[in-house]
Image 1 (cartoon, rainbow, N blue to C red):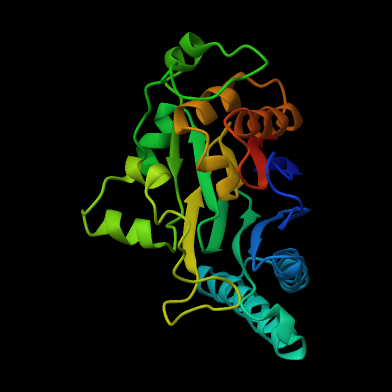
Image 2 (image 1 turned 90 degrees about the vertical axis):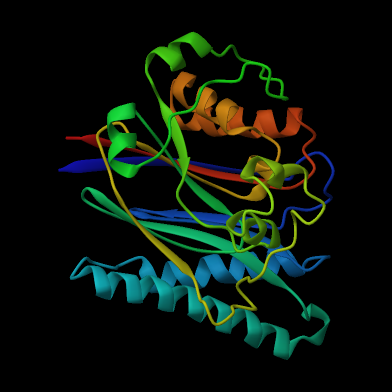
Length: 277
């Protein structure tokens, strides 16, 4: 039997004048949403999505994988419908939408649903990463960011810790990666990096992505908006996660890293740690 503890933080960043991100932590339910649409529209879309998904999933129980998968998909589709309904009532909100990544934890497993380019990562020891087929990462001490608190890169290397992205972005650049036109490391600097191919408010035929994870003792699930992952290299994220004394400090240091790297967007982070009772 595993337990989960979690923490979350959202920050406006250095260049934006309002925060269009929203997040929620409700027991075993975690949600991050990154709104878009200008003015207050993005903030409205993300809050609608978080509220709708929370209402639909806060009491979810595991009966079968298929039923849980259907429930997560339907909750996101209900959020999509709610955003569209709000747009129809207020034409000035036309074009608003939001990304979403949501996770529900059941004992030793997590189901993740996502739309857009907000992401979920799994940080684990090499033994756990091997079962997930997640490649280990060599820490790049020269990755561009500034961290106010010290990071012991050697300790992270020694622990053979790894970080792996477990969601697939709905974006033009990820389509280019899948087509082998660009490499994934080029996403952060590509001129089309902010073009998403579907959002809550305009979900396409393919629908939400669904991922099931098997959790190991000590694993950490990181969910975030692109305000983090576009600015902070995976190696730096891994080093911060592995060197932070607790989840709250982890979130703060990740936000600080994104702001130190420019803070060009809103930044929202949820971290969840899994451990045996």
